[in-house]
Amino acid sequence: MNELNRKILIVDDDPAMQKVLHIILEKAGFDTQIVNNGQEALEILPSGNKSTPVVPDCILLDIRMPGIPGVEVLSLIHQHYPLIPVIMLTALIELETAVDTMRRGAFDYLLKPVRRIHLVETVRKAIRFRDTMLENERLTRENREYQRSLENKVAERTKELQEAYRKLKETNLTTVQVLAETIEAKDPYTRGHCNRVRILSLELACRLGLSQQERVSLEYAALLHDIGKIGISEVLLNKEGFLTEAEKTIFNQHPLIGENIVRTVDFFNPCLATIRNHHEWYNGEGFPDGLSGQSITLPARIVSIADAFDAMTSTRPYRKAIPLGDALEEMAAGKGQQFDPDLVDIFLREKVYQKIRNFREN
Image (cartoon, rainbow, N blue to C red; front, side, top):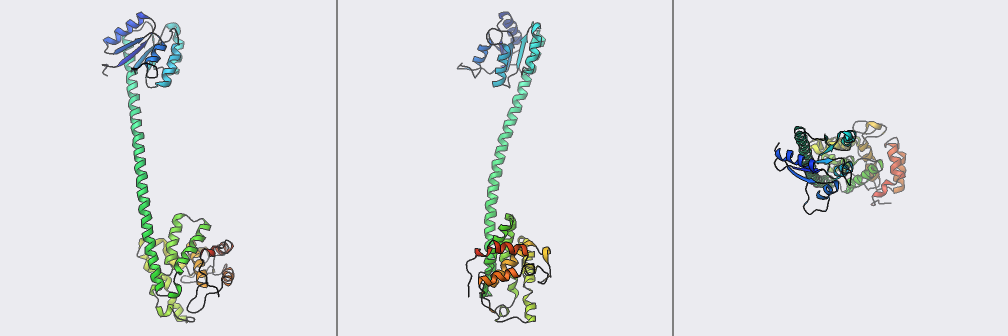
């Protein structure tokens, strides 16, 4: 350790002791400053009134002095300058008090008369301790600054990713809406149907407490639930009157066609089951797989209700839209048969259907 320019503050009221300490430390290469009591020591530290404060690397502090007791001075120094090591100077008769100062924050204590080798070695240890503490504090401060910088970068990056995700979501939603409009272009009677199914499905999902991510997937699935109609003949889609059994068989393929179309885009994988199974019935009499009850995914059960309700209240080639009251009665009658009874109860009780305003009553 290089003692050059290391400042040692000596606090002792005995001139003889001051001289001994000064000579020993000066010969060892230390720079010393001497004060006569605790009050003077406190005044030359930065918390005092001196215009040019001194921050020593180590303090030698006598326990018994006039004015403020050394133990009290130790407490004040340790409170305001915990990184400055304080070595207590004590007579043999004050040994118990000196040991007590260790518990109060003193680095060590020296018995008077002080031995040169013991004094120099103890001061060196104290300064090494201070250097270590200062380095730890510097590293801790740098770590905090790095942590703050890292947190700021993470926050900025998160904001950028959130913005990118928002734009991607908007782009994807726009793409899906274009696809939905493409479907409806083949069947003018269903114009706006996919969007109304989306609105009703999301409203019901909110009442069920679905997560944001689940609602996003449901939104895409609702818009795309009829995409398979792209593969169905317009003649069949726009046919007035009821379909023959053969025509029904063809029409009933649109969930499978839709699933195969969407399957090629990984982003839409969460929508596949809904597109395939939105025509399944709760009692197992639906298509294409004859699923029943809870084996039908929740999104598919939600879209099934929204799809059926909008279909009932919209004019189709084979029939006119039915009045709202009649549609609600049919929804209630379908509980446990076509529809999940719990979902229908929520749909009716909380008037989810009011989210769309374009009912056409006869």
